[in-house]
Image (cartoon, rainbow, N blue to C red; front, side):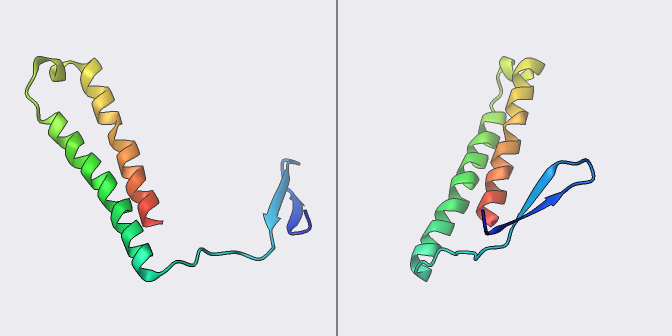
Length: 86
């Protein structure tokens, strides 16, 4: 725990801050490019499939208990885009 500096919040809860060396992943530019392409294409493909499923014209999609879970799936898909951006 030598790399962490301890502190106390206003509420009295302990708070720790890392002060040690930071490490990064060193990869070849071609491997990084291949990884980023896959990291962006996977959520893009999922988003296209999700939109296509929403465009199906069936009686079940007109019910709220079917439509709300379908709409709630958009949040994880957009969070995948955020993870790919990081």
